[in-house]
Length: 427
Ligand code: GUN
Ligand code: FE
Image (cartoon, rainbow, N blue to C red; front, side):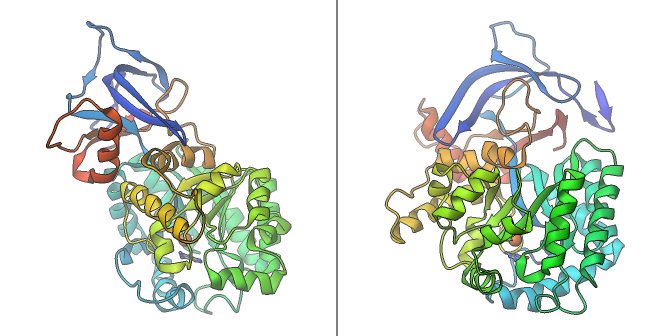
C-alpha cells in the first residue's frame, strides 16, 4: 500500500535482526518475518518458515537493527557542525553559538537549515531526535513541522534563556514571564500540528542561562501540560561550579528543587555526578543524554555510563551537535567505549563500556529515557528500524557477536539501505 507520495508502507519484512534489549544482552534473531500493522507498530516477529510470505526480503549481507535515538542535539547549531571547537564552553557560546542561533529569527533561513538537517540525520539512521531549537517560536514550530513532514520521530523544544548574566542582550527572552509564556505557546503550536511523531519538550537551556523565576515557572508548565523536560546538567567544571555557588547544591539537586527533575527529564552530559545525584536522578525516573564526543571538548572528565546504569539511571546517547562534531550515533557508540576507558584511567576500575552496552544506549536506552516504544524490534513497539549492510570481512565467519561489533564500529551511512519510522520508509 502507498501511504504518502512515493513512500511505500511495508507489511512483512524478512531479515535477520540484531538488537540489544538490555545493556548486557545482544539478541541475534536469524531469518525473521517481521509483520507491521498499518499504524506502524510491529504486530508479530518470529522465525520465517521456508515458504513464509514476505513483501520485502533483505539480501543476506543486510540486517535489521533498531533506529538510533539521538537524545541531545542543538538543531540551530547544524550550520557550524564540525567547526569552531577551539574555545571552552562559556566562551564558545558567546563567540560562535549564540550569534548563530540568533539568526533563526529569520524563518526562511531556519527552514533551509531544517530541510538540510532532518534528511541528513535520517540517512545516518537516526529515527528519533530530542532537539533543542532556538528561542524563536516560529523557527521551533517549523522544525517540528519538518520532522512531521519528513517522518522523523522528534521531541522539539523552544530554548528558554532569560538570565541577563548568562546570555547576551541580543539573544535572550526579555523576562521570566515572557520566557514561560513563549514556551507555553510553543507547546500549543507543536501539539496543533497533530503528528503522532512530534512532541514538544520544555527546554530551559541550563541554570546559568535562566533565572530562578523562569526555572520554577517552566517546571510548573511541565506539570500543568504533562510535557517532558530537557536541560544541561553538570557538563563541566564551569557549569558545575556556577551552580554550586549560585544554588549551594549540585546541579541535579538544584534542578530538583526547581521542580524540573521529573519522570523522563533528559539531563545532557552530567559528567560531574556524585552518588547522591545518581540516586536522586534514578528515584525521579529522569536520565542522562550521554554525549561522549562533545565531552572531549567541553568537559574535564568522561561520563561514567557504567556507574549511572548500575545506579538505575536511564541513559541514552547524544551527538550534542555542534559541541560534538559528528551526526552519527555509530560514531557516538565508539566514543562511549573510549569514554568508559577514560573513566578507568580516572580511577574507576569497572567503568569499561562494551559494544553491546554502547549500542543499547544508542537504541533501547535512549527510547527508555524518552518513554518511546522503540529501540527494540519486538511486537507492540513501533517499527523504527534501519536495514544496514554488514561490513566486509577478510575472513568470513559465523560468529554473530563479532559481526555485530564490526557493524557498530565500522559501518558508515553508505552502508544504510533503508530507514523506517513507525513503519513508513523514510530513506
Ligand atoms: N550548555 C548550554 N548551552 C549549551 C550548548 O549549546 N552546548 C553545550 N554543549 N552545552 C551547553
Ligand atoms: Fe548541549
